[in-house]
Amino acid sequence: MENVYAGKWLKAPKNLLFAVSERVARITLNRPERRNALSNELLQELRDAFFEADDRTDVNVILLDGAGRDFCSGYDMKSVYDKRAREELTTQSTESVDYRKSYGNFDDDCWNIERYMACSAVISELHKPVIAKVHGNCLAGGTDLALRCDVVVAAEDARIGFPATRAQGSPPSHMWIYHCGPQWAKRLLLTGDLISGRDAAKIGLVMDAVPAAELEEFATGLAGRIALVDSDLAATQKRIVNVALEAMGVSLLQRLAVENDARAHLGTGPRRSRYKSDMAQHGMKEALKNRDAGFGDSLVELRSKG
Image (cartoon, rainbow, N blue to C red; front, side, top):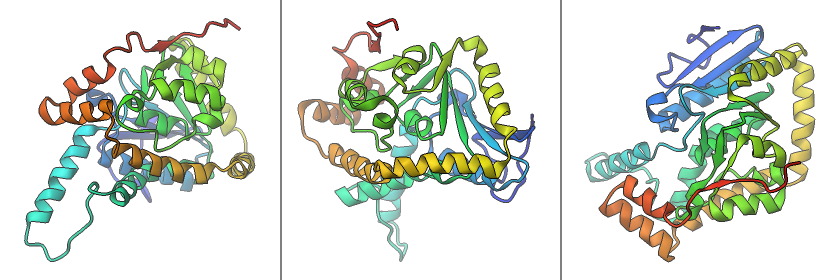
């Protein structure tokens, strides 16, 4: 595939690759040095890339993957704190227009999370089906992105989970229950434990998992099969299934997920308070170390081999 950067929506992105071949648009998160963590800039570019692929008549299906070792390690917390610092500088400046902050009260937090969720939320609105190809780590914000895709395929040794539920909040994009049901959704989110791609396929969190060495061939083969179908027919199949999800309350649940994540950020329990204190005094590395202390090996292993 040859990278294509000039288009209606997408203009020379810095954080992703975009290529089209044989009616498949491949969008690759390209921040391997940051393990493809989702910065504000990357999310905006990703949203533009989705629109670019959806608008092009030479594209029938979108394949989303990540460069380097991981699909996506989560949200880029450095960009979050940099944004807050810029907001503080703006507040102290002499600018005549004052904009709301991304923190401070419950509604500000909800507003900020909704801005972050705008990228993953648009996936269900696209007419083109989107396949997530997951390898390495798919954590926190990475799951917000992958689980909104129409189909998720994974390497058997991929690690999928939302460890931030141990002290920081709740998934602001909640597709877990629709993929793996209430018991497994609770099992994973109540502990922040991770699950391998192999076992994620067994519980329905991803559609299928294959050995890592076979993932590229498997994902591109599936994308190629879908690309054979006329785009309007593919849109029909995608949208009728999504209407069923709407009947099951998927949009309402996303609004509630955002609000409950914001509410969790206001928590004053001992683990939440310890995390905030560690972040303020020692930084993220120490905060995450203490957050995960006591959990031991966080990888779930299914007892049933079926």
